[in-house]
Image (tube, rainbow, N blue to C red; front, side, top):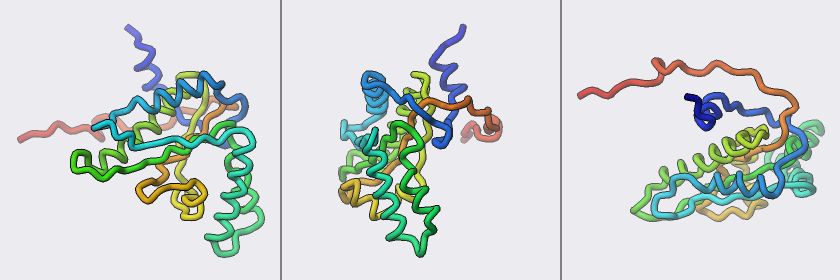
Length: 190
């Protein structure tokens, strides 16, 4: 018996941001994607993540922030590099910054909260691809940039878990080699 959810998980592929185009998700589809992203394990209901959307002209405006960050943080970046950074968020019609935020509590370790943000990233990608979109989870240099942190107005307990690029795939990505289960699975024995 075929199960569509399992089939999707077994065949899902990331689509390179450079190969995404319009259209992006509608408002209703975006709500579904974000709702799915928020339905991850969240011990003690801390909500250890939040989402920042970059759509339409906000993508170009944030590109200027990325170019300025690159200029400030790198020694003599080329004009080509600065132009690339300025256009970075234009690669897809929607970019979502997933922000991990850790609450100090002895009840939930920091690592568990960070993993919950990672699960939100994965759910977002699975939901987007289930709706027929292409998606890619990227962290790259700007996820770690102090200039970008300030532009995103991140608090001391927050950091970028990733940028999720979502759009329509120009072409279906080729399958890539995956690890064989016998290479990654062991049974613990006493």
